[in-house]
Image (tube, rainbow, N blue to C red; front, side, top):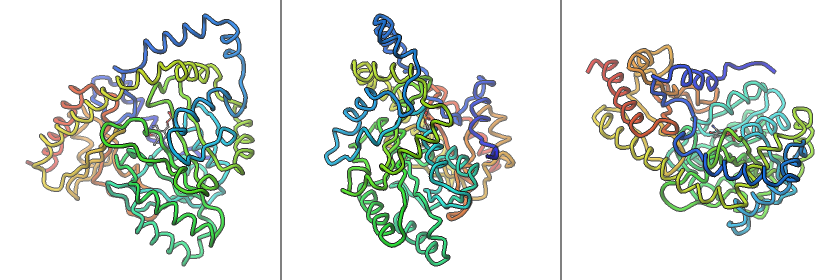
Length: 412
Ligand code: PMP
């Protein structure tokens, strides 16, 4: 496997090495609302119970702790009628990112194709590049991937003879990273129909629903997972979730529900890597989930992010509303805004803005990292802004300094 110059490691290292910089780039979670007391009590409860502690300090199974799998089923899926998540088809890993990797390794050969929204989660694009897969971007707006654009792209693949190469459609279903959008209910239904029809004509095709942010909702009603929208969805929908955002990425436990035929191949790949992710982390998450610690801490996390989302929104309105060509949408959850600047501004590290922004002490993720290499063309006048780790004051300062940098580039 070749290395692919992932920007994520560099961005996180920059944020840690230069704490005086205001990083609106790194995807760290909110420091202030990390569940310190809840974890303290949870660890205490585990450590007081010697057989339980002893068990959690031992290796676990490759698929993950069965009690945690069952608890996830009750907590995340059972509230949805017709959900088709069954514990035999669930796997745990050290974060959902690992599951994206395992899955892609199990299903893709070099030159196979994955379609995603454009822009999309750039870490996944790096994984796909490292496996030699082709990535094709489809236009997305505030309601997520645009289904007309998806149909057009699928027709192009049929015409070019590449249909057999298409293996998956990837979407960050709720509060997309980086777009901030949520796939609307009508588009969810349409996506399922499109894939069912494709599968009747061409054979296997997966939908990878990456739901890393689903519990970080600040406004509006939760939408049903794709898995619950059709009786056949369990044959082709992969649903991924994680405790990194709702609890702690330091503990790093993620889960996936997969079509039955993928479980054996995934277990094979995982056995070759680690034959099971850290058992202790899974025991901590299990204890926190079943004792109610996680549920009772969640409102604190949501209140923290809501205030930060609002701080970024207000600051953008204050400092960017008068810049012609600047625009953004309000995300209903998650950790990101997607900012579009006047068309001629290049946000990449080679562009003028990067120099001015770092000169002002502020970092962002240049938008071009988030575009698949084919399909919807990359827009270099865009950037991802994260309100995850900065406190509201840092967000306000960061946006103000970024606006100064943009004014400098525009000569205003
Ligand atoms: N998917 C998306 C869209 C993400 O933003 C992230 C975290 N940045 C992940 C997956 C992975 O999260 P983890 O591995 O911590 O579960």
